Length: 552
Image 1: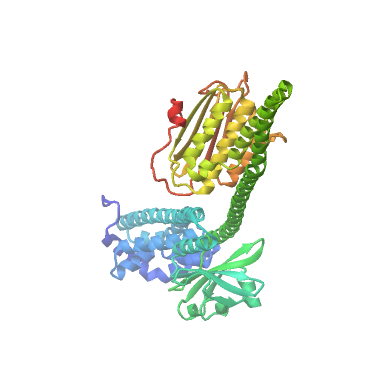
Image 2 (image 1 turned 120 degrees about the vertical axis):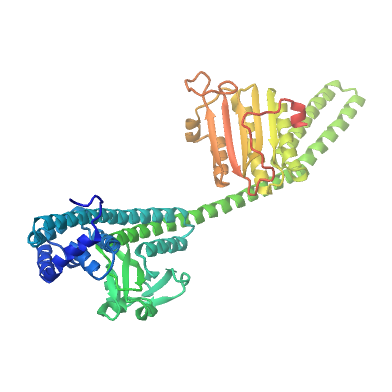
């Protein structure tokens, strides 16, 4: 009877070894010829020869354990997977060895032959399981490496950071002792070290790029120290330290742009699946570098645009202050002088008992006084003194008070968390709310307006909501003459914020619930440019109903 366990008894395999060893050389030669006829390359042949029952028998004869054989199967199984030999094909090749061995086992007699064949079948089953597991390990390592590379690309802050992370990930995949990444400077004909795993920083050194080596490094190559390709190892110190090196090129539009190089403490060839993954990783690295460069260029351009926008805002505010001062000092004073003269003329007309002249003078003085009031309003709009003297909160309350005076409807306002902002942000918030109020007064026809300016985390949220006639926001932005909304959006965008317009014309079919009739809601978020000192979040539909408390 066969043993009840799953794995053959050591003594049974030892008996099997006794049958195999006398014929081992002949069997190995015959098996090698069979594998070569089947199309296996030399490295695959060498790996398959380590998986046979004869290989297990030799280990036992040397006094070693069967577990060590399974470890040997795992190692060679991984090599076979990297040589792109499927586990099923490897198991089929092992069965050829069993068929060659069967006549030798038949000579042992029926009972002994049955016992030995059972042990051989059990060992084959365990070998096949180990081969499948080894292939899975190789695929898992590849998938994890690709996932790590994708993560590296996502979290990299710059091109140099990207290159360093890619190099570390690929060095870990190869199980190399060291890794270097060089970029090719075609103009100066040299290799520049940009990343290293051995403690050297980026850009530390460079190597001259000679013609023959450049051509050789344009393809993936294995480099053995002491062999003709040793001059392709760019770090000269590696030539006396690592017996084996790999080199994988980086390509940019078909032209050599750099190389990964990996050094190994033992001689080790780069197998096909490893070469495929490294080549794919190098291609991904080249694309990621280009993407990082474009992103970096875009970021710099956006920062330049923001700086320009801030400069434009500063220039605009300076010009507003200049115009405000000139209106106050020149036109304003002239109007006051005119009013004084009119008052004097009124007195003279009254003394001369000229009622008609006095009436015309009274009318003219009234017009002049209205002009002075309007002039003061324009001066306040151009350069709000409250913003400079009392801060943003007071300036916004004053703005809402003036808006309420000309609007005539119900205006609700809430402001919170507006302390400690930079002057640039304060000016922007003031101008944005000012533009919203102007648009509502001119175009909305609303009776209720809700305004709020509040801090939410590290953003300032400005919201203006009315129950007016509404409009088609898409057409409004596309219309050439619509400078208000487009100018508002451009200002917000240049400051790094975002803007939403939710509106529909009165009587339209848009199916969106509104809190106050049809109307319009404009939401704007601007970066606060500093940490949030309050730590409280904004609740979207909370308004102050007490107008005196809100704006007084």
